[in-house]
Length: 306
Image (tube, rainbow, N blue to C red; front, top):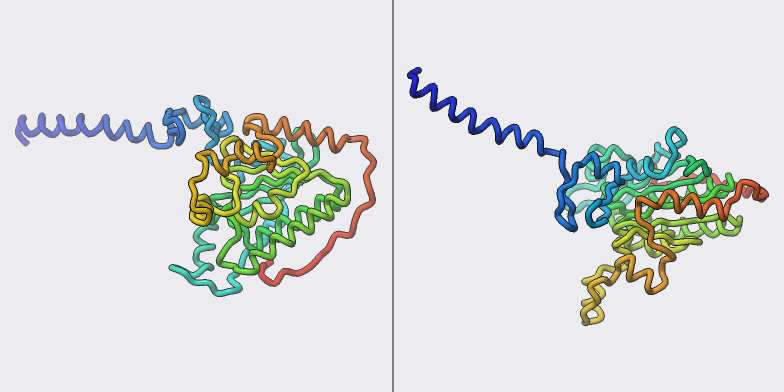
């Protein structure tokens, strides 16, 4: 190798190395806000519960992070983790439904689109369900409906307040009527919970739509929403095409829904745990007499594989 070639190769190495080093440092280290575009150190963003410190934009949160945000350390006891959806309709689109389920299970580490369990929220016993939008858009199929129903029944049996964090695109079309019937099933379980004089608080996050909005998301004693969350039944374009008129820009946002009286309050994520704890203490004081336990139903579900 000549001296000229050695200098040429050296020049290429020094030109490439800084770019490679810059990419290694940048990947995953900073997060760009979807709303204001400000770059935030990812570790600081997570410590701020994925709320942009510049504009207050609420980034989407997975079920694992949400449980960590709300439940006291070492108090979480998951329920019904073994329930897995099958493919009762043998649904096929571009790929079989069973294959799609396996893909999402591998990608998210979840069995389905909700996690349920018991724990303590600011030292207050609570039954908590958290939907996860990363699993098929948080759609409600047989397993989601069954897990939420079992959680409600467990909360009724244990005389516990219930909190459901909703994030869903609606009913799961791959399960057809078996998905739609979950709306009635969860609503009936909530009525028994209400008759026992127990507190139920749904937390509506972005987005809460479709069959979830038409069932348990809107049946709370106190309905809470996160700022700027989309809360709707039908989609905006569907409504505009049906009415043949332009809707307001803030239509179907949490602020619009609050103004129309469909939710009771909007609470930023950083204040949610404290606010929930205060509401639970007010409605479920520790010296409150416990009513008699109702019968806890036990039934098989044909569309769920145990």
